[in-house]
Structure formats: C-alpha cells, structure tokens
Image (cartoon, rainbow, N blue to C red; front, side, top):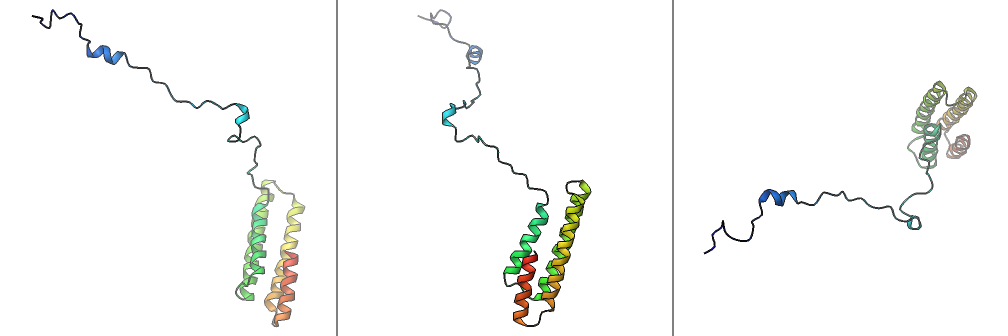
Length: 142
C-alpha cells in the first residue's frame, strides 16, 4: 500500500540533526550585587616582609632558645656565634643592595658583638647563680 518512496512523512536526514545542535555557552558566574560582598576582600593585605626580617627572625629564635633549657652553655655560645655570623651576612647583603643605611649595619654589628661577648661570659660561667645572671644579661642585650 504505502512504500517508503510514497509515504507522506518526510524522513529527517542525520546531517540536519547534527546541524541543529544548541550553541555551546560557557558558564560564567555573575558578580553578586555589592551588598553581598564578603567573599571579596575590600582591604588589601600587605604580605611583604619588612626589610631586615631575616635578621630579626634569627635573633628572635636565639632568644627563644635562651629561654628554654638548651643543652650546655658551650652549645648555646656556639649557636649564638652562628646566629651572629648569619645576621652579619644578611645585613651586609641588605647594605650592598642599598636597602639599609650604613649606620644601621654598623649599629647591628655592635649589638651582635656585645651579644657574642655576653654569650662568651655565659660559656665561662661555672656556678649556677652566675650562669643565670649572665643568661639574663645576654637576653637583655639581644
């Protein structure tokens, strides 16, 4: 009766189906109104470390070690020497880069020398009372 050629309904071709796809749209989050701010930071936070931060960090860590029971006095004096040397190197780098004035570096060197002298006195202490006094003095100069 009805053959495929004479059938009244027209068949769609595959290529036409493919052509009728919806266009791709990228999903973009719309910005919320301003009153919903909270997820957005309004004040800029400065994450930069101040000049000389490394030197200050070394000295703070040495001071923390002095507060604790830290091995022997010889060990504490050796650590003090290492910290002073490292702080000097960092200060010289900052001076060479022009970030710090010469007089600040000279003053830091003086303080480090005093600290080393105090730690040498701590190392030489024999009595417990003398050791405690000299440790307090070394902490004060730090």
